[in-house]
Image (cartoon, rainbow, N blue to C red):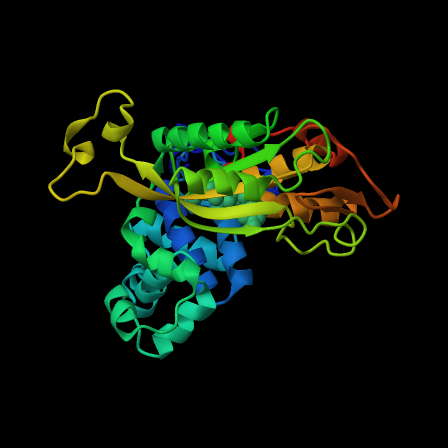
Length: 377
Ligand code: DCP
Ligand code: MG
């Protein structure tokens, strides 16, 4: 045997929602490479290929040890020919030509920068590139018509592309809780998204809000927004009303992963740590530099759910994105059920399955419960 006692064969179940994926990724070099190819496929409008690379990366994230030889991967699910070739190149040569040339390509770099502007999707970025707009300077100068979100995104580009820390997320949670408590006493605010999975940084901060009495949560978002605006907290906000109707949006529109809660997608103006007086600052990174503004912009998503849908909303907004996608795929293909952030519908029994906790939803789906910190697929 080539690797003697060190040689390990791996085995994992095929759906990401059937396995535990902690943040302790032993194969980061390989998964970073596959994630870059996934990014590139998605930026090229090839969602199918993007998902294939994401599933392959997720399988490697679930392995307990670093992969040292491709023969260890025999029998593992979701590793297609293309992904295996990339893995092999990296294990044998230290790098993959395809990954490195993609990383360096002008088109990839331009798409990354432009879609890094809040409010700019792949289609818009692609159109701008065809019009000769490949960087932020050109975007600012040659000024195509920008909508309100894109204007805010461009204005706060540097802040919004700097990872949000856990301390910043906690500071924002305090502000959101104060706002919610003052406009609807008894309402409950829960931190969701990556921070609920234990991540130390994120691209935004996600919150789910509910009230124990069904119906009391209606119209909460506009009130919270007014409170935040009066306190000067908001740099940008776009709210949407709840448009979910059981029956119409449940089983009938199963593939629609956009949910229909009352939401507010916003940008907060967060005072910097030294201004918040939250303990000591560490080193130059936090120190106020000359001309440095005393606050930073942070993306914050607020979602309001009726308490009867809370467990589904919590499961749906905790992520990871691939974990969510895999839960819905499992439900549909293995259980003939439709799962959304609002409800679970059993297509054979032709009825909704109620749940008051995430644990009950996993049980309905015939899955072992996976806690948030193990949903980092
Ligand atoms: N989500 C969803 N529907 C949307 C937006 C998000 O179901 N329209 C879910 C999937 C995500 C979770 O909510 O896992 C949070 O979305 P984010 O994009 O904020 O993802 P994360 O919080 O996991 O990542 P990050 O740490 O980068 O913020
Ligand atoms: Mg998030």
